[in-house]
Length: 83
Figure 1: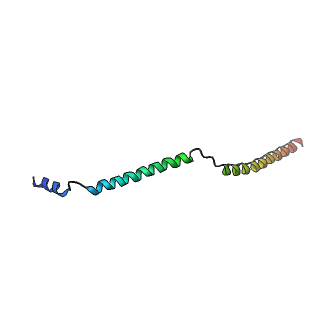
Figure 2: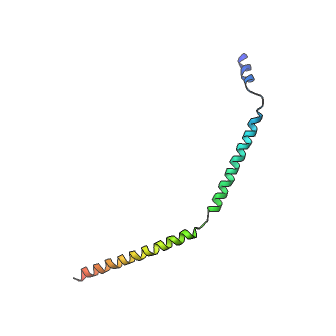
Figure 3: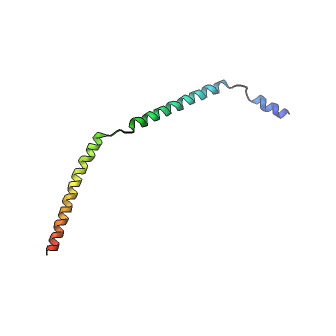
């Protein structure tokens, strides 16, 4: 029976600082959640037009170079088959 009294006496009846700390943690987690949702909402369907323009400009010379290479290969095949 004495052991039961030791356990009860070592624990304080109320912890006033603990509820305040829990409230602060809850507020911080809620703010982080709101910020994360806002970030994903803002970036969800955003098109980066300058980057798209740069990619199109890079792709056009690449396509042209590939077309010239294909034409040169076809001409070489034609010459090879002609002989």
